[in-house]
Amino acid sequence: MKTVRFFWFYFKRYKLSFFVIFLGIIAATYLQVKTPVLLGDAIAELGKIGQQYFVAQQAGETGFKPDLADFQSVMSSLFLAYAATVVANLIYSLLLTRIVAHSTSRMRKGLFGKLERLTIAFFDRHKDGDILSRFTSDLDNIQNAFNQSMIQILSNGALYIGMIWMMFRQDTRLALVTIASTPVALIALVIIIRLARKYTNLQQAAVSKLNAYMDEKISGQKAIIVQGVQEETIEGFLELNEEVRRTTFMGRLFGGILFPFMNGMSLVNTAIVIFAGSNIVLNDASMDTAVALGLVVTFVQYSQQYYQPLMQISSSWAELQLAFTGAHRVQEMFDEPEEIRPQHAPLFTELKEGVEIKNIDFGYLPGQKVLDKVSISAPKGKMIAVVGPTGSGKTTIMNLINRFYDVDAGSIEFDGRDIRQYDLDSLREKVGIVLQESVLFSGTIADNIRFGNSSISQEMVEVAARATHIHDFIMSLPEGYETQVTDDENVFSTGQKQLISIARTLLTDPQVLILDEATSNVDTVTEAKIQKAMEAIIAGRTSFVIAHRLKTILNADEIIVLKDGKVIEQGNHQELLRQDGFYSELYHNQFVFE
Image 1 (cartoon, rainbow, N blue to C red):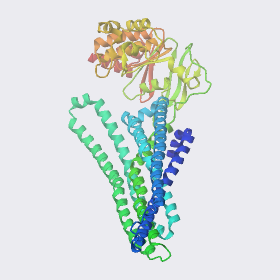
Image 2: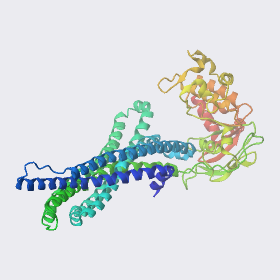
Image 3: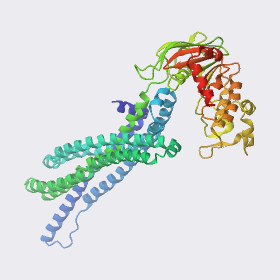
């Protein structure tokens, strides 16, 4: 039912167009089932002409000229029926193609809009390749199926019903002979279609896994080469690719076997109708021989066409299954929970007092706490450093401050108000983040610095670049700030990307600043530049700094030491050294190696 509701949501606005389509299908169907009757009438008229000619010859009338008016009238009707069928098919095909093109465009827009409203938890649970396949293969399958298969299924379904109706109107006995083998064909059809659907679903899932695997390995190709695990990577690919091959083969096998099976049933059915039908009507003394011959020809036409609709429907069913599977996978994304945005919430414009993290608990999975009763106080304008071993919960705290996730218990407050009560967009506008992995987007360097606010002037862009010590490098490039940033021609080192990211954050003028291990992936010289840039952006702002290298946070107003999701120590650098605890040990161990 979800799949039906999904399609109804996008197609319901085209009710009038669908009404015209159905009228076109009905008209085309009537004309198609009427043509065998007209053909039979033409044969009957030819039979009558032949009989008249034979009688005239027997009577010695050498100048006999048969009356062709009735025959010509039937042939004219037959020609008009064929022409009208072509016109009706053209009209409903064009309308349906237009509907599908507009609807899939709306699906794509809606899906991308939904993607932008999803929680960070969704992206943490799903691989990029899996998400991308919903936009590519799944939506493409929907479009292809409705452009091609849906027309076939609708028109042939109507044709099948119309053919049965017309056959019983012509002769009940021959109609029953023609449809006698239907139960056998339908039982086989249901079994084959169910198996085809099963393996089509498995195929889509396998393709999604393969895409995700390829995306992951391509992104980490350097690490794969360094570790020398190319063979293991290939083996993993071959295993997933084999599953795609197997499910694709089985899906196509059961999808492809339908056509030859139904074609065989059609040939058998035609033979039955010729044999049984001839015996029935030619032995019927109440029926004229010419009329009986025309009726047999009519039902031979019907018998040849009887399984054609089922053959067309069955051959299109595999593509339609891909569309249903794709719709189900797309609907799964639409069913994902969105970020919680309070209605009519006040805007967060300025931090006046400070940030309070009060006794918070949090876990990414139920029953698995990452943070346990954590409390941190950050007065306005103060720098709070968070340190601790890997997995202690440092980055999790940053995710909670920006509402990437919401706490399970406790609260995070800005100026005494729970951040869940603020307007979410205004909150994030005033919370700046510099991540460990900096991201540059396609466009110019200037566009990357002003990313998110295109109204910022070139002068302000350059001021931010100077403050973060990246201006001189940018000006050394041939096109300066207009240098294009692309994946293929990326002129920036990791440290330079980080400086641009810091400049971008500086332009947002954040009230609360989060620096998540901004210097962890750079050399000592670049670290010094980033440190100066960090000092420029931190000045006068309430800031949270996550750091592995303790020398970058020695001047912090307060240092929070986390271990196993709990605050075990807190104080400034000197106070923590005097405590001679975990922080002191961590500090001395680092400086021994440096």
